[in-house]
Image (tube, rainbow, N blue to C red; front, side):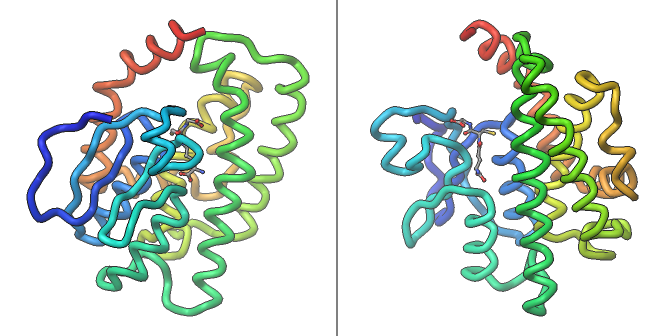
Length: 229
Ligand SMILES: N[C@@H](CCC(=O)N[C@@H](CS)C(=O)NCC(=O)O)C(=O)O
């Protein structure tokens, strides 16, 4: 949990590491809101002192003047309620509900099933045929859901980026990679406007910075995961 020297007067501290897609989602949200924060480089673990901050042992975790919190959706909502300037959720209750539905669909029906394929695709291991067979229909339904909920014009909630986009930016490319490798299926092409959405988000300077930081640490991270097998 050791991090760089602490910055003075910075209220928000974000724990995580550059390769983590969830960590980068929160960094995009913080950037969109123009909030200053300190990064404390942290890997997930089940160590007691880390579990006190993040009960599941996962990253990201945000430390605030009110206390710590984990779970990316929760962090997004806290940030928008605590710091209303530069909102990342739409204004009307229905549009907010729709944004949340898109975010939950991205995590539950695309990110999490795609993660089941990481061992045999990204991590140098093996995927059981049962897993391969189980994941495909979930991903297909996830894609169908996304297409039903958003027309991507070019962003998920319309012409300006918002919270669901900061998730999609880190969910869709990896899910597409593992779907291509496992099924020869381009999940991204199956999402109407998906490629254009990622292209538009990729023009953001922060997105480019976080991608460069992730790339710089990717080889070391993958080597560590593979060595741990
Ligand atoms: N639902 C969590 C997922 C976070 C998550 O899975 N983070 C990964 C790193 S990208 C992690 O900590 N993995 C370690 C673990 O699952 O124990 C969130 O929304 O923040």
